[in-house]
Structures are given as structure tokens and as C-alpha cells.
Length: 264
Length: 214
Image (tube, rainbow over all chains, first blue to last red; front, side, top):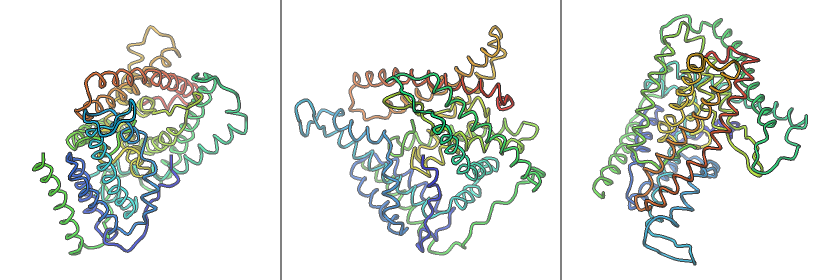
């Protein structure tokens, strides 16, 4: 699940790191949506180029992106394998009953191009902004307090609960769980019961911990006033560079959408 | 069963965000009507983290294993907190491991969250609709329905989204065959999810019944 690798911020001295988190969130978010509107294959190189340019400006190491792109999901894999073989009538190459089709290849190019570009922007956002700063920016943009509190608390305890589960699973294995032979394509009722109890115990332990956490929070004044605490100030005054970067990204986003409309 | 970035057109992504916005607003409104909503935030948050972690538990079905979605169970245990919890869980997954996506966050939250709210209402209706059944059968049956329908409806939304957004060149017969195969393929998964939910809820009913108060 990769919980242990959640802290993905990489410190660098770059223009993207210095970009105001609020402007960065809005600009990159809009650019991601502009990428999602692209339906013309001719725009894919532009889209990939823009993502690569921003990644270069962020000075994040290539290994950071490569590591994360190694988990593209089964769905994208299915798209890459199936679409060129099943979609369209124009056969480009044929090996026996297997035929590579032009329409399928074009659709795959479009989907994979959009996927890579949007994902790269997402990782630029995460790699150049600490998670808590990102959450602060979202809160200053109107994220409800309750949602922000829940996100913070979940994030805070995610690793502890993941460690708790790992310990419980190790204890189960030491007591012989998973050593018995199981029949193929059969769900063993006893195994499922044990896993349900494992999950149940994890929920109960988390619930009991939440009661202790709540008492500690109450002692520190949580929930005493209905007044909403001010959102944390976002660091760094907005320099000319900030606005220039925001303007350039927004122009690129609008340009892509207009080009898409013209080419459609 | 997450839809990654790049598959859906921007209009569908925007519609997903709009539905997520309305569902979140509605859930928060219901939560804020409770006597002390602040008291429930730590409980919901830690359980959100626990559900996120628990989704990595696999049920062995040799030679493979089945990964649980747990959205129905989330609805049963968290009630109206289920939708924000799913939104947060998906946000973590998109940011941390690139599973799902940021443009498709709204669509994925709708796909998982609306069935979770439905599962909550199904489970809560057990004392009204399932009066004829004795306890604990009643709790078990309604937990099973919540878990199975939670996954089943999410799978149907997923399939509908994929089918309506795949390239138009794919012929209708192949499309129908794919829908049928994938729909039938999800039935055993829904049964596993429902059974797991029922087992877990019956365990919680014995050990920590206050967790089922929604």
C-alpha cells in the first residue's frame, strides 16, 4: 500500500518550490483539467512537453517520478494491451489472429499521454509542497474545517495504525496463520472469519485510541468554541516570479483548451 | 477499482467533483446537526485511517487473492462520516501512491461514497424492515446487504463510466460482451465483500457494539 512512503516532499531551491502553495494548487489543478480536455493526438506532445518543462523547473530527481510511475495500475496496463488489439478497423500490422489497429493505437496514445502528464503534475505538486502546507493552502481556499481536521488526524495516525496492523499480522503468522493448504478458487470460511476478526480488532483498537486522543484534544481546548480558527498563513510574499509562473501556467491551460476546440 | 487520470473527459471529471461537493455538503450538514459533532471527529478520523490501512488486507483465493474495497462496511460503521472518510482516503491514495488520480478524485469519491451512504441507510433500516428476523440474524443479513450492495453498486457505476467513455470505434457487440463479463465477474466479489462485512459486523456487535451506532 505504500503508507511508509507518504512523506514525498523533496527539498530543493527551485521556482516551483518557491511558488505560493495556493497559486500552485490552483494553477496546476487547472492545468490538470486542461490536460483532461485534450482529445486530439496532435496536442499530446505539447502536453507531455509542458509537464516535462514544469518537472525540470521543479528540479525533482527523475528517480522520484520513475519510482511512482512504476505503479501505473492494472487499468492503464489493460488499456495499453487491449485497445490497440481490439479497437478500430484499420489494421496496421497482423500476426495470425492478432491485429494491431490504428484507431486503438491512437486512443492508447491519447490515454497514456494524458495519464502521464496529469500524474507528473500531481507529483510535482506533492514533491514540491509539504503535505501540511498543501492542506493549509486547501483550507485557505475554502476546505471545510471538519474535513481539514479529519484529514490531518487521519494522516497523523495513518502510520501508527499501519504499524499496528503489521504487528498484528506478524503475530497471526507466528501462531500459524496462512500455513494451512487451501483449495484453488475456494474462499476458506475459517480464514475469512479470522481476517474479519483481525480487521475488527484493528477498528476497535483505533476507536479506543481515538477516545484517548479526543480527551487529550479536549484538554487542549478542542471543540470549546464554535469560532473557526484562522487558517495558517501561507509563507512567502507573492513575488513577481510567483505571478509570472501562475500567469504562464494559466495561459498554457487556456491555450490547450482553445487549441483543442479549434482542432475538434 | 479506481479510475486513473487520463481516462475520463474533463466534463465527467467536473461532474464528479460537483456530485462530490453536494454529497460532502449534505454529509457535513447531517454531521453538524448532531449534539456534539467535534466529539466524533477523532473517532471518524482514526477509523478513516484504519479503513485505509485495512484495505491492504487480502482474502486468499488460491492461486490469487481478493482485495477488499470496504466501502459498504465504512458506511455501516461511520454513517454520514463515510463520505468524507472515503474522499480523504482516496486523496491519500492519489497523492501517496498515484492510485486513482487528482482529476478523477471526484468521480472515484462518488463511485465509492454514494454506495457507502446507501449501505448505511440499508443497515439502519434493519429494525424497521427486518423486524421479522431474530437477532443476530437480522444484523448479519443487513450487514451482508450493505457490504454486497456497497461494492455491487460501486462496480456498476465503474463499469457504466468506463463503457460510456471508451473509444467510439469499439463495436457494440464487443461492448455488450465486455459489460456482461465484467458485471458477472463482480458478483462473486460482491458476495465475498458482503460475507466479510457480515462477519465483521457480527464480531463488532459482540465485542464493541457502540461502533455500530453510526
